[in-house]
Length: 324
Ligand code: PBG
Image 1 (cartoon, protein in one colour):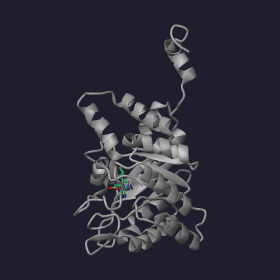
Image 2: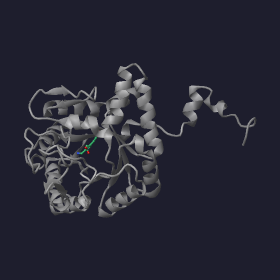
Image 3: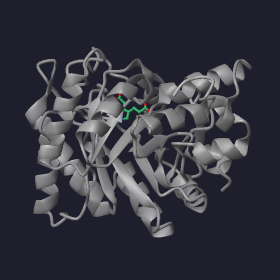
Image 4: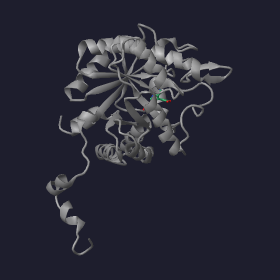
């Protein structure tokens, strides 16, 4: 086909034609909405670098979950900021830990929304690393036990799915085995399989108060320069028992999402992270672009690349934009 027989503009003429031939559609059904739980009551504290997002006590978390459910959003992803952090990150698996409390409250008040919990230690450790430190290094195998215990305690509190994000080798297997041993074989794992050491997590670290106190996360999170390695990381997680695989961040890694879609047949999630959200919010505050259009374009790009599930701070805004 070529010009003048082919004229691409014929089918771009008006919105009806554009709708008719559109290849990718956004749906509220694909969304996961991340929330940050903090101790206390009646707390709803704005996160400076993430306009529109808040640290919330569990009463507000439940309210927010109800609102998300009303908008048709199928799932929330919970992060917790404990009242006290320690070397071992014990708040992560405490029976009355902040995430455990939030899960119970949400499942009690809004039973129909899926509650996914982040399984990691960085929000709970005084040093801000995702694992246990010994001799100045993040220890892989000792961390696995703590991650497994955390996942079990979250699932026992009522979490519908656990999402390990610590990037320790063998974490999916360790968690799968621990869940199974505790008769939680029906709880799926959404694995942060290809998680890069990214500067785009900056605003999240303000939100979760989880900036590493020394060094950085490059000894466990992936080098942004690597793509083949992402495929290897994902296959390992698939073999260890992941039910859903994830690429994170999303926009700077669309090639990885695309390749993951080609090579694996499991449901694929993409995390549109805090920095991707913050950049557009900041540009909008400066009057430099239209936030809603930039949001739509970003999210559709992630879906077009191959993601099935979109984890995004814009979940409510998108649901509203889609007419909910
Ligand atoms: C680790 C975790 C992080 C994010 C999700 N889980 C931060 C990190 O690895 O430093 C980042 C999410 C975002 O930036 O929106 N528990």
